Every structure is written in structure tokens, then in C-alpha cells.
Image 1 (cartoon, rainbow, N blue to C red):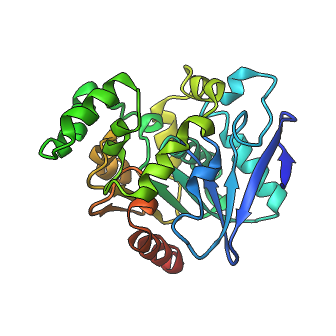
Image 2 (spheres, rainbow, N blue to C red):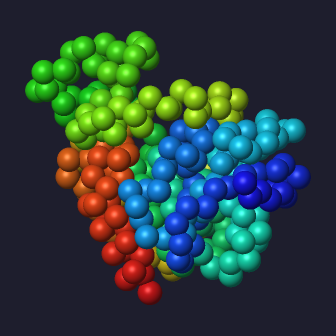
Length: 272
């Protein structure tokens, strides 16, 4: 298992899958081990899957404040340096988007492209409300399983509540969500959204200097409010394209691997 030292001396692990042009990947959760990303539906790239500090195979940091999303941008830069990449393609999922956009603003010249999948918009000042979540859950209110799944979603018990984060509830989706509990590090998750001195205004100002193309990919069945903020989120970049994947939820590479690969590979192939 390859690893490197972050700037504060914490040993961080990453996993490599596939061959070809590198694509550095920042997982979400927050605090979820990168293995839930799998091979991103078979995306034809050399995937560099970063385990965030305190999660997966990465070490627990001495300073719990470094779990914060803005502080973890430095880990992405340390990984780029370790890999010897002058510029890189960067993909982030869900909560990991907060790390990625902070990194993008601090190091705009280091990115060839940025792909944000079901991105959390908290760092740029769009904070989802209870009404946003309710609207997402109600996307599935005509489904026969809606009431039972809603009860489990609210209680946090059982797998049925996770149906709201997927498109079709296939065996692949069930297996994917079944691993979530073992993949999530509590301390890393708790520390991720700790109060930060970095303001949305500061993050947005950094994004305005990014000349790399950006893809914001969301699923139209995702209960997570990220889909509601995709277009205003995209408007913060000089060159961004929001794309909605039909029939997909919060993990579109699980719901429809072929469509996901087609969209993301096409973006990466045309980015120059």
C-alpha cells in the first residue's frame, strides 16, 4: 500500500486502480475510506484514491483540527507533490468537494480539470436546509417502499433508508451501502465540518481564478440537496458544466456505471 507524509507529518495512504492518465480522487463521507469509490464504474484512468486522514489506511493525526475540510486541502497538495505531477486531474465526491474547491482556489495552476460528483456545496456558502432534504426524499414518495424507507432513514437503523441515495435498489447498491458503516471513521467525520475561519467569500474568490474546466455531475433521484445547488455552484467557476444523470442517486457510478463512465471520460478527454 503506497503512502506519503502530509506537511504535518501524518502518514496518509492512497490506493491505485487502473492504468493510464492519473486521476486523483478525494472521497466523501465525510471520513469514509476511499474503497467505496471502487473503480468508479470502470473509469479508464489510473485512479489515485486518497484515504483522508484518520480514515481507511491513513494514520490518525496528532491535531484533530486538521480533520477540517479546509485543512485537508494541504493533503491534496502533498499528494500531488509526492506523485511528481506538475498539473493533475482532480475528482471529488460529496463532502470531498469541499476539500477540492478549497484546493482549487489555493492552487488553481495545478489543475488540468476538476470533476465534482454529487458535490456538497457547504464550503461555497450553500448550506442545505431541512426543507431541501425533505424535497429530496419526496422525489420517491410514489414508490411503494417510501414509508418504510423513510422511517429507517429518520431513525438511522437498517439499510432500507439508504434507498433514497441510490437510483435502482439493485444487489450492487445494497452491497455498496452495506459497507458504509465499516468504512466511516467517526472522529474524521465529526471533525470535518468543525467551525472554520475560511469563509465562503474567500473560497468563491479563489474559484474565480481557476481556468481549468469543471464538471458538476449529479443524479436526478439523489435525496441529497447537492442536486438543488448544482447550477448556482457551477456559476462560481469561469468554465463549468453542470450535468444531471437520469435515474441516478448520490453514487451514480453504482447506479449506472456505463453512463457515468461515458460522461466523465468524455469530459476528461475533451478538457484540453
